[in-house]
Image 1 (cartoon, helix red, strand yellow):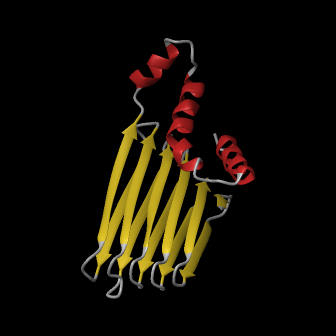
Image 2 (cartoon, rainbow, N blue to C red):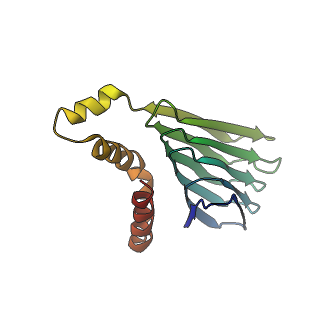
Length: 201
C-alpha cells in the first residue's frame, strides 16, 4: 500500500511493476493533498498474470492532482481490474486517467476499468479519462465511469435530522470510499489508510 500526501512543493511519483507467468499483484494507492503527479504502470508479461489496481484519492480546497493508472497485458490469459475512486471538494481539480493495454500476445485476457467520483461541491472538478487499447481478438475488456454529486438538498436532509453539515459530509465520504477500503485485508494497513483520510478532512 502506498499513501501519498502532497506537500508545499510539487511531488512526482512513478510506480512500475512486472509480473511473470501466474503471478498476482495487488496495488493499493491512496493519494491526498496538493501538487501530486503520480503514475502507475503494471505489466503482465507472463501467461496468466493478474494485476489489480485499487486507487483512492481525495482533494479539497484548491488542491490539484494528476493521476494515471495503466495495466499492460503482453502475455496471454491475463486478468485484473483498475478501480479509481475519489472525492473532490472546494475548488479542487483532479485528472484521473485509466488505461488498459492488451498487446498482440494478450489473447484470453479478461480485465475491467472503473472510475467513480464523488463531488461534494459544485466548484470541484474531476476529469475521469478511461482508455482501452486492444491489439488482439478473444479478450474481454470494458470500462465504466460514474460521477455522484452531493446537493444542498442532500445536506439539508441530514441537517433536518440533527446532523451538522461537516458530519454529513464525512458520512458521505466514509460511505463512498468504504467498499474500496474494505479490500485492504491487513488491519494495520487499513487503519493507517483510514487515519490518513480522516486527517485530510
